Amino acid sequence: MKKYISLFHINWQNSLQYRFSLVVYIGGYSIYICVLLYLWSAIYSEGQSVGNYTLSQLMTYYILQLMINSIIFSYVSWDVIDNIKTGNFSNFLTKPLDYYVYWFTINISGKMLEAVFIIITAGIVSIFVSDYISFPHNPVTLAYFIISIILGIILAFEMDFCIGMLTFWLTQVRTFKYMLQTMILFFAGAMLPLDLFPPFLTKTAELLPFRYLVYFPISIYLGTVEDLLPSFAMLLLWIILFFVLSRILLFRGIKRYEAVGA
Amino acid sequence: MIRILARYMRLYKAFFVQCLKEDMIYRSNFLTLVIMDIGFVCVSIILFSIIYGHVNTIAGWTFHQSVILIGTVGIVREMAYLTFRRGFLELGNHIRTGTFDMFMTRPIASGIHLGMRHLSISESLGEGMMGVVLVIYGFIHLDTWSWFIFPLYLLFVLNSLMIYYGFSLIINSIVFWVVKSQELNTVVYFFMETSRYPGDIYRGIGKVIFTFIIPIGIIATVPASALTGRLSPAFAILSLFIGLSFLATGLLVWKKSIEHYSSASG
Image (tube, rainbow over all chains, first blue to last red; front, side, top):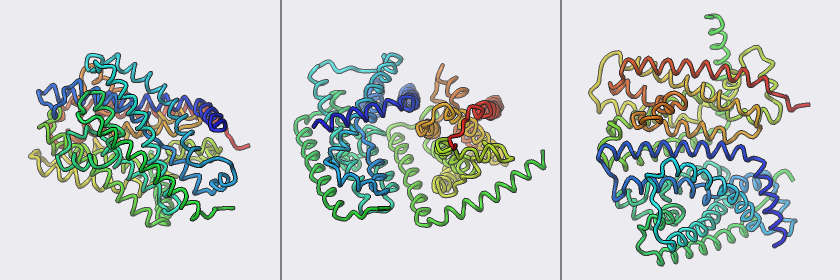
């Protein structure tokens, strides 16, 4: 445990070095959110509406989407892919570190820093558009929301790790990841709320695990989820499933692995 | 002036051939990129059609007119990859490793050389081709035909390319102060992604910001407005003026910034 704590610390410091990039990134993202807010106000000001959403619910949806996107989604697989492709993976085989836990720690420490920045940004953005934001009245809702985010971080990491593991089998894993990423964002509800989709796409999204990454936490926040406990049970099931899958892939991958540039 | 232009054209041709050869080494990669791009454009179209499933117009734009917007972004993006875009993606590496020296010592402008050295035919080809298809598809569903509409469209596409170039120069100039720069290009990426929405959605202060400072209300909207016959002469002239001033500011900022470059190679 101690070694992972120091790993956490080191990575935190490392990421802090690049805080400027984070500021730039978040600046770009806030502008993106502003554009979406203008888009929806334009639509609603013409007297139109989408689905059962009020304008303030949609605005809230997108601001939360901005936060969740940064806090939940894991991008360590880019490094995992590099690590395996270049042959640096060999170093791990000789170290008393668990590869899975290693990347989990890296992910969490990076995410924590991002979360701090993002919450500050979201706070600032919220002040400007406070008229359009809805807050949950029940503190229990907020607690469920936070739990769902924590579980989301775990599930997102597991999925991302699995994608990284594909490097052992696929040569063009980067291209594959790009495509998969778009699909995940789409079915997670990061681009549009899932209940606005045409029925057959909504049905598809319900069967996939991705909805737990974005749509589910936001729906809890907005109070539009009816079957809260079954959904949480399902989410836990997916987490277990992907955990088992990542361990199997890692185990099989190591057997398949041939070091490059040894 | 003409002679300089001719020289640059000749250089462009040489670089183009070279880069095409580099691209062609990885033929399967070429194909995957094109297919992937087409997939991404399809996702945008699906998103727009879902929104249009609920509403009739977005700030006065119908679905077919919005298709022209999506297509225009694709065309501008592909043109950018054929001229400068990937050079900026590589800029951070060049500066970190010191190979940017190469661009400082050649007898052509560094901002142009950087782009030409990394021309990419495959990177956005799928989106560009889809763009042409979408613009044509959107256009045949409209009834705004007149003979000068296509040259006008082309003119404003070039104007948008100029804005895009100027914007990239300004944003990427930061790299000379801050070495790690990937995020800068994320900003440029969002810049193009958000250009898909009609500029008419912006109101008040947003209108000013997204027209003059971060001109995402122009990139696709102005060329598409020309095609859909909603472009007022005043706004047309204004956007040409914005194009020129972005290019001028970009070049100026770039010129000032490379003075800050200190080589990393010893």
